[in-house]
Amino acid sequence: GQNIDQPTEMTATEGAIVQINCTYQTSGFNGLFWYQQHAGEAPTFLSYNVLDGLEEKGRFSSFLSRSKGYSYLLLKELQMKDSASYLCAVCGLLNAGNNRKLIWGLGTSLAVNP
Amino acid sequence: EAQVTQNPRYLITVTGKKLTVTCSQNMNHEYMSWYRQDPGLGLRQIYYSMNVEVTDKGDVPEGYKVSRKEKRNFPLILESPSPNQTSLYFCASSLGFSFKNIQYFGAGTRLSVL
Image (cartoon, rainbow over all chains, first blue to last red; front, side, top):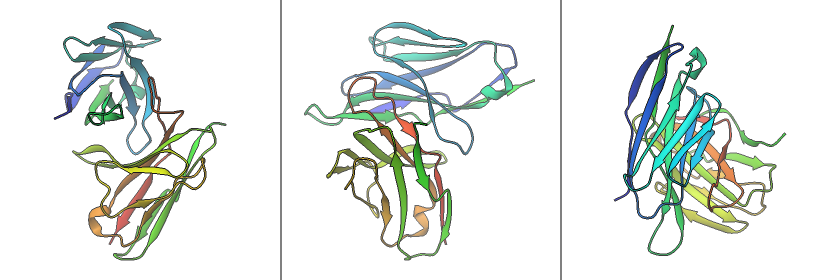
């Protein structure tokens, strides 16, 4: 089957750095996404990786290793407003044809404490 | 402003009373999708549409209907709602469904079926 694993909860301190891991097993691979979702709100796009390596965007960076089926989201200089759920999603294959499917992890709930 | 608009935001109804949740996007996106989100189960896709008059089942389609008569609109219909359909619902759209298909989400509809 296809599945994505990420930790359920994490806690960090304001100003610190936190790394949220995501491992995946999917049929096919067409990119990995990270979304941020504040409680009761809609998910919003953070980053996209399709090639191995690090993508940096301000305080947020995302890393991908396709051979290991592994990604992480790195958040630097944590702020209270970063308290949210972080969703990892992989674009895999729906079936034996070329139809693609977005597979979602359950999300990692990050609490940033003062 | 580019956006996905869902209505209503909150809805309380009773078992068996037909309801429709509307979704509209103003970005000329081809791909639209409905998700439900439940604690511990994450985002689960209900139905999706690759273009006008093209719809298909997602992972949890039972009890739901959709239609895509116009590119911008993708309503979700519950013909006979039941309490197990109490959930947070999100509509999402993307330009297509290929590489880097960033999904833009509506604000969500919180549905309670009594």
